Length: 259
Image (cartoon, rainbow, N blue to C red):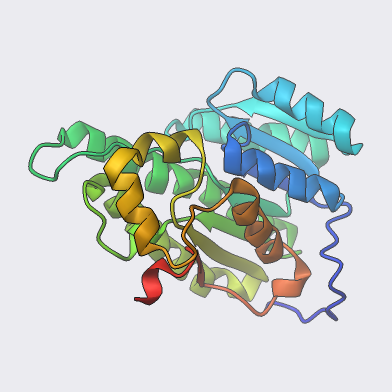
């Protein structure tokens, strides 16, 4: 059962431990900052070599405890090491933000199938590897938990040249629904946030020139999203204030999919 807790609007995470994948990247780092401002301790997970330094910088900036763990989420050994390091350092885990992802764009008839497989392995299977392990810990702890996955508007609408990305994010959305159904009895909320194009390195690489201008015209807000806007939604879904929300995929797209 997911318990009711009086809503204060404080979004307080004091004493909680949050694992953030892609923690050295744009959305992941902004999510970690949001968590730290609300008092959470942090485990940043990334394939980037500088992730321990990023964690150290957050520790100094916000006065919370933070560690960085270098990991490839397609490796079961790496995933198990993330969980092991988290428990060794903090004893428990209360929040998981699945932010890490990759995109490779090409026409469906031309794309190398290996690139499709890579996107599914990272965005869907890799996310499930860690979610499964942390879910097991949360169930054993008996204190509930929050799991938030960054999906995409591409997970439920067709976007040109996004075949592999769409397949992977559609799989993630399905994962969210099943886990929310199965894990509600353990007090675990599982949700997603589905951004439009976000102004990150990955977003800028995918949307340039004429394609970018066409996309901007299709978004009623007439701009792309910023990383901290996505992080704010992840924060909400990670707090007690959202306890009655589970199995949902919150769309953050400036109105793109209302048309």
